[in-house]
Length: 161
Image (cartoon, rainbow, N blue to C red; front, side, top):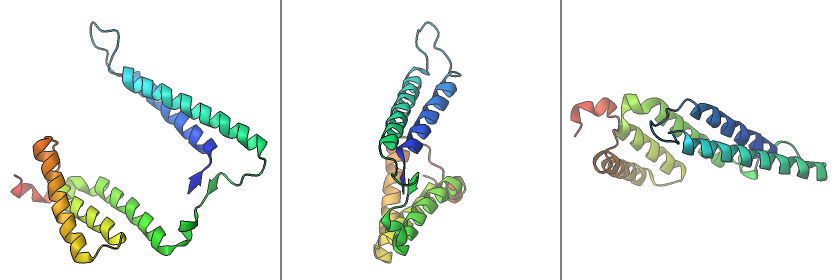
């Protein structure tokens, strides 16, 4: 799907504006002229500026080319059932991760996540499951042990290492 640059310009400008409004509530650092909101505020200002520039250019181009098509154009792959199912699986596993990781835990959710993606990419089922288990455990080790990121254990809390 291709969104028209007018849509992207508006989305970027709104996102940047929302970020600018949000960082106003960030605390200040005593004795400093800058606070915690300085860099996020710069990012918000940059997003807003880029969004407005993109919007202005897209509207100018639209005026020059009267018939460019609609605001949203679907690519050719949306006619393929396999590709559309793959897109649905990508969205689905991300929603699964967001909704289930605290309850199931990172390890179980990660295995399902990676296995589903590999199966959509036509990896052989046994290889997909083995790779999903090995890669999930490797990712867990890197984040949990090396980087000390507190990943949820969920159902495996009783065997947490």
